[in-house]
Amino acid sequence: MSTKDLAGLSVEVDGEGYLSDHTVWNRDIALAIAAEEGIDPLTDRHFDVIDFMRKEFEEKGAAPSIRRLNKLNVVPTKELYQLFPGGPAKKAAKIAGLGKPQGCI
Image (cartoon, rainbow, N blue to C red; front, side):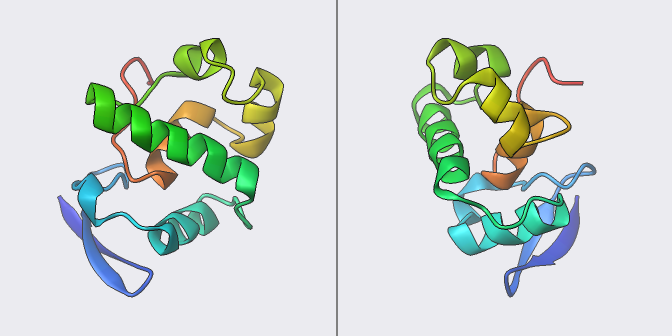
């Protein structure tokens, strides 16, 4: 584990930059992570996905996969890839302060 400064806070992250403790997350941290990932600004549609992922994590204990996001029609698959290019489930989970979804390489 290492420490990283995000939105004025010092937070622990794993080797891939995912927050070690999802409870320290807030929207300012999300904005900072998104900017690092080249997604700026975050829109309401981004937060639709992010909020859904956090809710699913709280209920199920794991970040949802792209299959689950698609199955539940949070946003259409094409839009998901536009919102979070280069690995939507991984990037959305990272910005949401969650660990990498199971099944992601």
